[in-house]
Amino acid sequence: MKRDPIRTLLQSASIPRSEAAMLRTTQLAVGRISQPIGAPRPRAGRPTGRRGWPALPRLSPAWRAGVLASVGLLTALSFTPPGRAATGWVGGLVGIGEVGGPPSVQARFGDSAAFPDQVVIATGTASGDAYELSTFDAGSRWGTCFELNFPDLPREHGAVRCISDQPLGGGVNGFSVAANDGDGASNYHPNDGTWTTPALGIISSDVAGVRVTYDVQGAQRVVELEIASLPKSVRKKGAGSAALQAAFFFLPQYVANADSATVTTYDSQGNEIGQSSEPDLLNLARCQRGLDCPNK
Amino acid sequence: MRLALQTDPRRGDEQSESALVEAAKRGSKEAVEELIARSWPDVHRAAFLIVQDRGAAEDIAQETFLAAIDSLERFDRRRPLRPWLRRIAVNRALDHMKSAPRVREVSSELLPEGHAGGPDAELSDEVLVALGKLDPQERALIVYRHLWGYGPSEIATNLEISTGAVRTRLHRALAKLRDNWTNEGETK
Image (cartoon, rainbow over all chains, first blue to last red; front, side):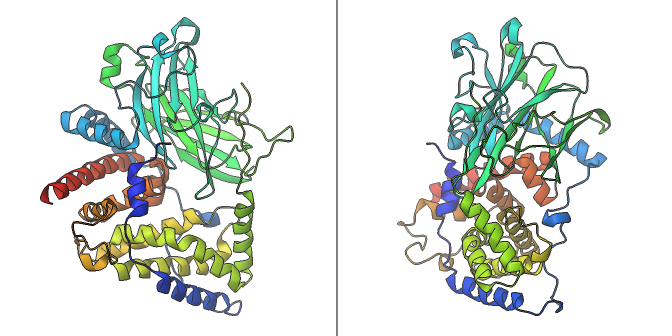
C-alpha cells in the first residue's frame, strides 16, 4: 500500500532519546495530580475554547479576501513551470495524480474510456491518506460529476456527487457522506485510533466560502470547507462545468448521527448568500439496524 | 450497493483512554503515567522536528503534558486526547522559536550515535537538515500535514490562520524542502 513518503521520513528521522525527560515529566505530573483538591495550580497552556477544544477563527473580511487570493494564487502556481514542477514533485511523492492531469483512480461508473475527459482538480492528504478530486462530464443522465477518491484505499472510501441541473446561485447540491449510497465510507487509522469520513458536495461558481455546522453528541462542530474550482486547463478541455465547483471536507470521526446540520455559503465579499438547515442535510448514515457505530 | 460500515478494532483502547482520563481527573497516578507513556513519543517527535534542539524539545514536551494535567478537569473525556496535546505542543514549540535564534543548523551533536551526519547517515537524517532550513511555522505545517495527516481546515484552526494561508504556505514549504533536499544531495 502506498504511503506518504514524507510521513515515513518524518516518523523515521533520528531524534534524540528522551526517556529520562519522560520520566521526569511523569513524576512532575503525578505530583500535580496528588495535590489536594482546591490547591492553587499555576496556569499553563494557551486559553482554549469550551470543552477543551480550541476557539475557532472568526470570519473576517481580511480572512475572506486572503482565502480568495490564496486559492487564486495556488491555482496560478499549479500552472507556472516552477509551481507545476513543485506540484509534480509533491504528487510524485505521495503517489497521486497531478492537478490538470488524469486521475490514478477511474470513475466509479462506466470505465475510464467512457470518461476520457476525467481530470484531477485537487489533491492532498486526509489524516495521512492521499486523495484526489476529479471531475468529468457523465452525459445527459448524470451531468457533471465530481469524485473524491483515495488511491490507496478500497473504492468505498471515496465519494461521488453528480448534478445534471445547475443549482441556484449560492446553493449547495447536498453532500455525499458516509455511505448513503455505498460510498463515502469512514476510514479507520489504526496507529492513532482516529477516523476520517469524506463529505463531498457541489456548489455554484458564485460561492467563495462554505461553512458547515453540525452536532455530534450534543457538541457543535464547525468546518470551513475546501473548495476546488476547475483549473484553466480543465475549462480548455471542456470537462465538467465551469459554473460548478466542488466543496469537500473530512469529518474527524466515524459515521456520525448528526442531530442537525447547517450549511452556509458566502460570496467573494464575505456576504452570506445561502443557508440551509435540515436534520438530514448531510445524509449521514444512521446507526440503526443493530449496526456497530463506535463513535456515534 | 451495501452500506459500508466498519467496526472499530481498537474500540477497547479508545474506551480505555477515556477511562484513563477520568481516572487521572480523580487523581490516579497510574492513569497519568499511562497517558503520558502513550503520547510522549508523538509529542516529543513533533516538538523536536519543529525546534530541532534536544533540550528545548524535552522542555516543550514536558510543558505540554503539565499544561494538559493542569487543564484536565475541563477536558471532555469523550474526545480523543492526542489532538489536544498536539496542538499544545506545536503552539509551545512555535512560542519557543519566537524567542530562539531564527535559524539553527542541525549539528551532528544533536543526532544519536551512528547518525552523525557522515557518509553513512540514513536518508531520514537528511530530512532533518532540509527541515531545519525552513522557518518554524513551515516546519509546523509539515508536521501537521505530513506527520499527523491533518487537513488544511484542521491546520488552519490549530494555527489560527486561514485555510488559504495554510495551503499557500504549505505549498511553499514543500517546495523549499525539495530545494533544500536537492542542494543537500548536490553538496555530498
